[in-house]
Figure (tube, one colour):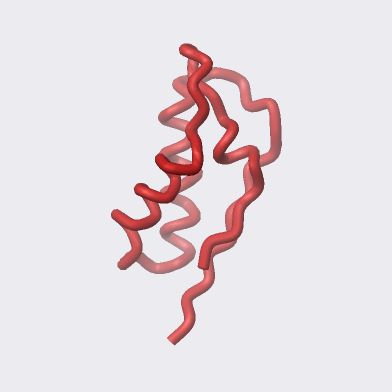
Length: 68
């Protein structure tokens, strides 16, 4: 389960393209086997790389929980 603020999906790059729901969903699927704490860190890193140094206008929060 991943819960996140819109600051992640609305983070934009120099071309004014948003990170978006689909890109985040794909990233989460591709990394689903990773530990929850690592997945949170990786999402935030991926968004930072995507932004390419553009300023962030909103908070970015993500919480990942695993259920056995």
